[in-house]
Length: 126
Image (tube, rainbow, N blue to C red):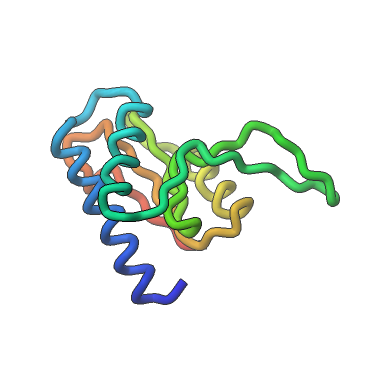
């Protein structure tokens, strides 16, 4: 992904996240934020896959073990959505695993259950 394209894409993603949080505020279910966030991304003309299945390949065997990316944008950016009191190491590990398995370079861990969304966004580059 070119640096310019990556910057433009991640800027669109973040703008959509801020719009959803501004309209809904904290305290709702993750699924609510996921659906509204996906809708905003669609409106921007982006390719968005919700609950994208992510198999694990172990010794040449493809295993369907139940991993699902909340939102995969343009087949390049993994978004994991949370609505929790605080993000913790398990959430980070989950996103890093999804980045590794998907071979995507950029991921966002976004917790919508915060007063200011700026405090709920973590960006990762693999």
